[in-house]
Length: 424
Image (cartoon, rainbow, N blue to C red; front, side, top):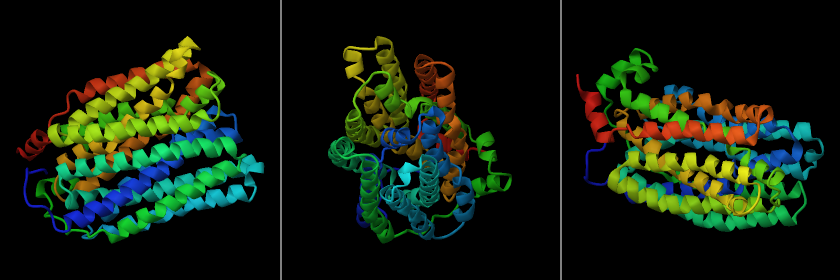
C-alpha cells in the first residue's frame, strides 16, 4: 500500500532506467505491429471473414489474460519473480517466425499462413502474460506509486513520439512495398526493436518481497475467487474494467470500415497509427501528471470517457458517409491511444495500490484472468456486424462503454480502499 513520501528503494534509479528502456522498446514494437490497425489489416489481406479478422483481438487478449491466474499461483509465494519474467520474453521470437514465413511465400497459402500467424500471436501473448505477472510485482516493489506514474507516463510519451515516426514508416512500407513483403518487414522490424527490451529486463535488480499480509493470506486459503466476494473495491474495479474492455467489440473493425465503407486509401493505416500514437503521447504526459497529483482513479475516468467517445465518432462518420466527419475518422484512433495510455496508469496502478502486501501477483493474476471473459468480444463484434450493421455495432459498443464510465465514478481513493480492507 502507498504510505506517502519516504526514502527511495535501493537501486531506484537503475531500475527506473531499466524499466523505462523495456517499456519504450515494447511500446514501439507494438506500434509497428498495432493490434488495432496493422494486424487486422494484415489478416484482411488473407481473408474477407469478419469473425476471422476479429480473431486478432481475441487471440491477443485471451493469450495475454487467461494464463495469468495459473502464473500467479505458480509464482506468488516465490521469493524471486525475475526468472519467470525473463522466461516469458522467449515468446518474442515469434515475430521473426512470422516474418520468415511471409518471406518464404507462405502467404500464397492463406489458410496455413493464418494458422501460423494466429499460433505465433497466441504464443507471444501468452508468454508475455506470464512475464507480466512477475513484471508488475517487481515494479511495484522497485518503484513507488508516484514514481510509477512518472515512469509509465515518460515511457509512453517517448515510445509514442518515436511511434509517430514509426507510424509514418508503417504507412510508407505498406504503400510502397508489395504484399506480403511489406508486412514481413514490419514483423521483422518489431522483433528487432524488442531485443533491447529483453536486455533491459535482464539487468533489473529485484528487491526482496515484503512481509505478506496475514489477513489476505487467510482469505486466499478459502479460495482465490473469494477476493471478488470480500473485497468490494476489487469487485467494482473489475466491473469497470470489463465494461470498458467491451470496446473491443468494435476495435478490430475500424480499419476495415474505413477502407470498405468510407473508401479511405490503404495508406491511411499509417495515419491511423500516427493518430493513435499521438493521442497516446499527449495522454501519457497528461495522465501521468493526473496520476501523480490526484491518483489513478481520475486517470481511469478520463480514459473511460475516451473509450466511449471512439465508437461514437465512428458512428457519426458512418451515418454522415462523407464530408468532414469522415476526414475526422483518425479521431477514433486518437481515442484508442488515450485508452491505451490509461490502462497501466489507471486500472493497474489502482489495483497495485489496493492489493495487500505479498499478494500482488494473486490480485494481478486473478484480475487479468477474469478479464478473459472479454476475449470473445472481437469475434462477437464480427458476428454482430455480419448479422446487423456498422450502425448497430458502433452504437452497442458506445452504450456498454458509457455504462462502464458511469461506474468508474464510484471508485474510492486507493488509500480509503486500503483502510477499509484492514477493518475487522
